[in-house]
Length: 163
Image (cartoon, rainbow, N blue to C red; front, side):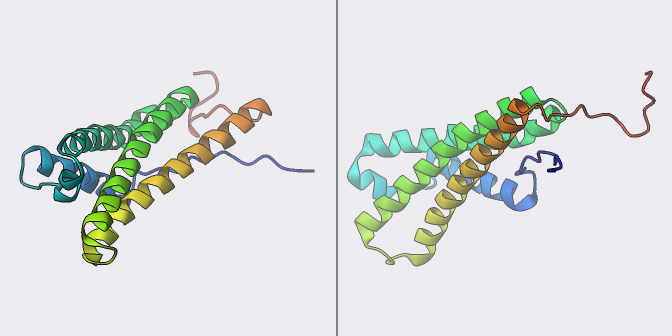
């Protein structure tokens, strides 16, 4: 006989995850205010570099906002899934943007020419992709629990049932 287990959603609400999301947001902010120029992307195409900075800015902003919004969605499965979906799409965009920047760095300067920069940019892209994987896994497990009728209502421990 199998015993039901609670479905736990992996939360990015920790200092490391929020820090990575903040870094992912600050990079395009620096680019938009022209403190940082994505020269490797500009070498390929200036419109590509301009589009990249705005896509990364919007994606990182929404991803960070979704992580913060999850606090308000706790306790409501529908709201939590909506926030997760929003974060998943935004984080996929962030991952794609960092992957594109990493590929441009390798194309322009060669693999390992700037190892720290390539490691950080590629790492942020992979970490964002990993978060998308976590979100998809969590949504799948939640949907499976709903289909099996194994969802529970959350109640406060000290709250009497009649209130």
